[in-house]
Image (cartoon, rainbow, N blue to C red; front, side):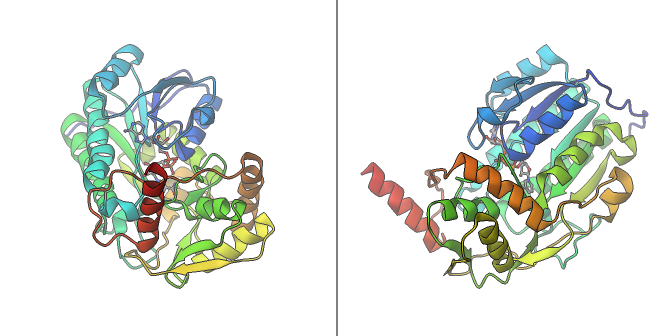
Amino acid sequence: MHTASPATGSAGDSILVTGAAGFIGSHVVSELLARGHRVVALDDLSGGFHSNVDERATFVEGSILDVALVDRLFDEHRFAYVFHLAAYAAEGLSHFIRRYNYQSNLIGSVNLINASVRHEVRCFVFTSSIAVYGHARPPVLEEMAPSPEDPYGIAKAAVEQDLRVSRDLFGMRYVVFRPHNVYGERQNIGDPYRNVVGIFMNKILQGEPLPIFGDGKQSRAFSYISDVAPVIADSIHRPEAWDQIFNIGADRPVTVNELGETVSRAMGVPFRPHYLPARHEVLHTHASHEKARALLGFEDRVGLEEGVGAMAAWVQQIGARASKAFGALEIEKGLPPSWRDLLAAADRRVG
Ligand code: NAD
């Protein structure tokens, strides 16, 4: 096992951020630029927007699945650090797009790990997910054995393990974050499969009720982006945090009904739920963040009311976004009926 002491990030380091046109990635890019780093921002725009990326970053439109492109970028830019956030993070949908999920979220990650090992990257920062805990009893703690319940969580858990063995064999240092339900400005509110806060806001802008799977009593903790992105960006400056895993996000769980009420208030409309058949999902989950507090200085500062209010103001400026069905389903058996309706509507538009 390699035990060389780490050289921590200094201003001017060349850094690759993948998923950089996405929600969390674009905020991490801004944080890194503010700290004086040079940033190459890679994204295939499958879920993100070029307009999200700070103009001071070097934007490259391309996929982490394009090995030749990845190798070329590492050759050209000699990255000291990699922040890998690119993924298709539609957890519920991942059952029905298994191959797509494993290609994007597992093989894509392996392409970056291979290049990072070969190019002696100092630290590889990876956004995993609370999904690795599956049905574990909350509050979930980092030392619990992963037990994911869906292909998305399985891919994230596999990448975490691959980073651990890459550290042991090749000495490549890493930091793993397991965020949960982050929301805020620049989130893609048009994705009908993920990010309940954005889905609710988009529905309200379209004058529609809020779709809720089950009775809305399932609970989650929702984290505002400004509590999360700076901590991710700063992790390269904290060698005591390297080779470790951190939960990151808000402490206080709320039910989806409570969230719907908060979002409706922020958007200035009455709460109008549309209850759908329950889907296969973890009912209650939230995480302990003691480790991130102790080692990374994490603080859960922005309350739900305040964060949702800020996002609502932004959403009201950008307006509603068209939602499109994911076209290439690999399995339709067991698909929630509301997602089947989305597909049928898309087929009608094509036909
Ligand atoms: P996002 O969809 O806004 O960002 C992901 C970005 O990755 C998108 O811009 C997309 O275009 C890009 N991308 C996807 N496949 C790609 C590929 N093959 N090559 C290049 N780019 C590709 O999602 P986000 O919410 O910002 O999530 C960022 C990361 O954090 C993801 O890894 C996600 O799994 C993780 N995460 C997010 C949350 C959350 O609540 N938002 C929770 C847990 C984990």
